Structure formats: structure tokens, C-alpha cells
Length: 164
Image 1: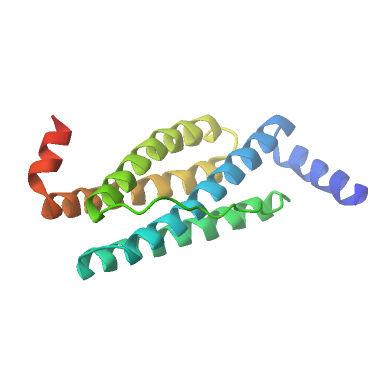
Image 2: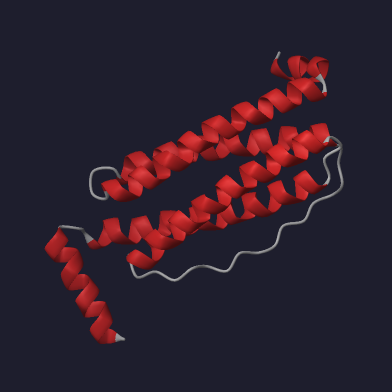
């Protein structure tokens, strides 16, 4: 085990990665892995509770995209020699379809700001990690737009009041 650690330290130095940058990247990737895994679970739960089948299908498609994000993050964590974290299951009270969609939109907006900040902080030293985070961000832009459309179709008056 100590031999592997020295070997990875040597490679990190050879490639020009600082120990701090490396640890920061693993920390960011691990946090993002947990959040994206929970998004997949939450979106899947919300999809199963949707009143309209087309909304269910759309949320399941978004959850499938988020599952790809989890795979990308897992690859990067393993590449840096990190271990995949355990992800706690999520549970929440029963709500109506509109409330689930609004919750998914709000969650996506919070994650978007964090993603760009994290990508920028890693861009210089670890551009490949920043690129993965930026791809996740771009998918999130599309997902939030799709959720907004569902909210508008679900109850346009409530959503326009929420925006005001």
C-alpha cells in the first residue's frame, strides 16, 4: 500500500500536479459523485410519482443522463486513486408533481453555480477534471430548461407567479 502511494506521488510530481490540487480534485469529484448519485435516485423517485406519463419519461431520461455523470465522476476518482464513496439513500415526503418539478429545478440551479466554481478552481492544474464538470454543467442547463417546460405545462399560472 505504501509503495502504491509513493508511486502515485511520483507520477503526480512528474505530471506537474501539486499534492494540494490532487487532493482538492478528489474532494470535489467525491462530493459531486455523491450529489449526482442522489440526483439520479431523487429524479427516479419523482418520475415514478408523476401524474403525466410524458413527464415521467422525461424525468427518467434526465436521470439516465445524470447516471452517465456518475460514471464519468467514478472514472476520474479511480484515475486519481480515490475510492468511491458510499451514497446514503434519499427519502422525502410525498408531494404533487408540480412540487417535485420545482424542487428538481431549484436543486439544479444550486448545483450549477457550485459546478462552475469548482471547474474554474481546477481548470489550470487539472483541465480534464474541469472539462468533466463543465460537461455536467452543460447537461444541467438542458435539464433545467426541460424541467421549466414541464412546470409551465403543468401549471403555467403558478410557475409565472413563482418567477415574479
